[in-house]
Image (cartoon, rainbow, N blue to C red; front, side, top):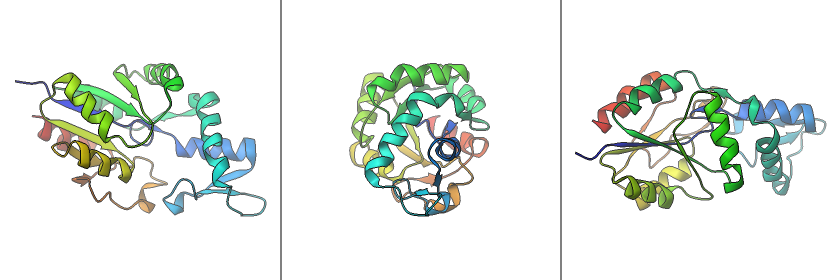
Length: 202
C-alpha cells in the first residue's frame, strides 16, 4: 500500500506570520496591517495618514521581513503535535511560497521549532508543484492544507483527487477570510483538523 502524504503550507498554518509582520511594520515603517480586510496587498496602511501603501511597496516589505525578521514567527498551537501524529502514518512536505533563496532560512526556522520535514519553495499557484511532489513520492491518499483560496483552486485544477483543507490559523485574520470555494473543508485549528486529516489519509 502506498504511503499517504500531507502537503502543508507554513505561514498561518504551521507558523504565525501576519501578526508579527504587523508588529514589525509598525516598529520599522509606521505601517499597520489591517486584519479586518481579509486581504494582503490591500491591508497595509500608513499609520500617519491612513492611506494605503502602494502595491509596488508591499512585496519588497514582505521580502525584507523574511530576510531579517523570521525569528519573530511563533508556532501555531497544536501544529507540532499534529505533525507528529500524522507523520506516524504519512510522509509530510511543507510547500511554501518563498523564493529559492529563502529555502535555507525556512528550513532552519522550522528546525528551531522542532519541525524537520522536507521544505519545497514555490512561486505562484501550488497545483503544479503539489502534483510533482505527489508523483515523486508515489503517494496514495493526499491531503493539502493552505490558508489561501487561490492555492486550493490551483490544486483542484492540477491534482483534483487531493483532499483540500482550508486553514487560517491566525485568529485576528480568520474571521475576515471567506472559506475557499475549492476546499473540501475549513478548519482553523490543528486539534480539530488532525482527526479530519487522519481519516482521509487512512
